[in-house]
Length: 183
Image 1: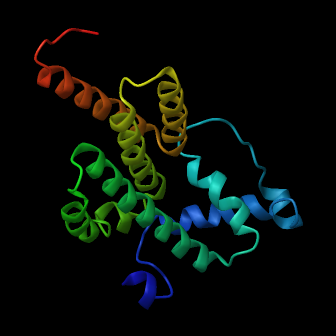
Image 2 (image 1 turned 90 degrees about the horizontal axis):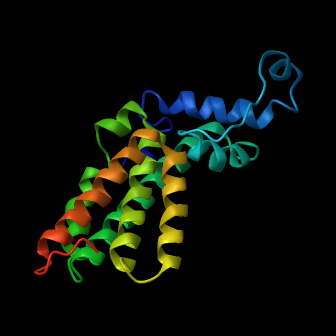
């Protein structure tokens, strides 16, 4: 509802992110910004939304960009939850959708932790890929590594959570297997 009914989303830190995206997008074209700011890109955690949002900040007004970011977070998290649910238990996506939808608007969103929430959605997608392709081929592992890099670039703490989730999934599969061989 806040996306549709309010001009400003009630998210504390989100507009700091949007302001940074605006500055990064316009620093080359605005002399005032150029005197006070410079872009220094590096492969670090927490730049996932920066890389996606800066090109849009050149053409989209800041308030609309904030709503677009929140909508993207909602889509990535919701669809990731459905993908992981259907990978773990085919046919369980309907129950997952009903239970996950109300949780999208949460405390972390009201604080504006955009990179963290976007990263959580990517973790759900990456975990769904892992579950679906576990043990199939080296290509599946390579894709999983690329997805892990995207998760890392989205948020460092979420990358650690991804590692814990994959370890838990593998431990569960190991304990569920009757022969329990390490391979």
